[in-house]
Image 1 (cartoon, rainbow, N blue to C red):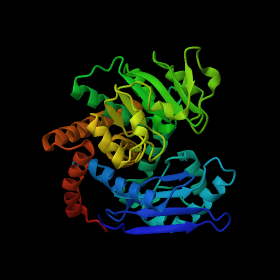
Image 2: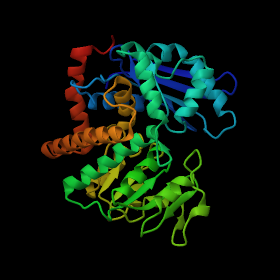
Image 3: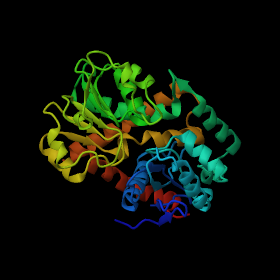
Image 4: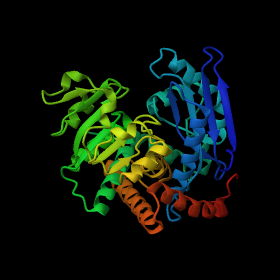
Length: 394
């Protein structure tokens, strides 16, 4: 595996907290990857995420589209986002990373941070935008920035389009897998870890497609109901970090320990919160009904756990495909493949994700490999094409 192009560790002079930036690759001189904030974040974690971003960009390469893939990068800050000093640390990190953000690192929200918060901190750090490095690649910067701002202002039933785009992609990945296996949408049971940006919007799309959300987990524990949860009520009762006010629960809704989202009987499990959520030990808790684990979070299933799950007939749909619509939606909108319209965004996302998931699963079947290995094989086919056309480091 090639070493990253840039690997930086920053130490906050006020608190001693550390932050990290890893640029895995540049394409046309620019890279793309969000900024996460969580207690315990490490340089190795950020490096793995940056490699994943290189793959996500390559997977969405469409020579007919206006959006041209960028390189992969990622930022991370070792701090609990609920810490009273977290915002100050974020501002100081962005100020320190300003030369990179101005030149070649486009970033945005990730685990622990919202886009609104990133935008506010970026402005305080003296940045024009967290994605300003891509502006020189746009045909009409003013129109593109207006289009993206308009898109972020769109809401659908109380949730912003920027939040819904990623969940739409995850949900379509689930539906594509069900369709390929000949499993009906109606009544298929789903357990979701995390009801934040990704998990919440995924739960909404799947519930509206007829699937039964039987469990969701947040920082307070797991909420479960074998007959299905009222997803919209839970979404309306979330705080900024995805924690649900238990006052909205119905009599039949049970409160369980946080780890019980794994053991609730469901055909589909969706880790949508933290990395490293499913390991070789706790995977044993996953029930016999499970057929798919769909990685809405980044790197939630450890490799040894994935191997053990495969022996049990549980297929893991990998993060580099499943959650890639979040990143792609930004660029589809900014480059002008889609406008600031929810219906257009959802239709484009569904078509793109359906084609990508179908290609991955067909490749896995043909090669006799896992979906993750198939996704990596597709990336390996596309990277030389992108490098030949655009170069890695220009």
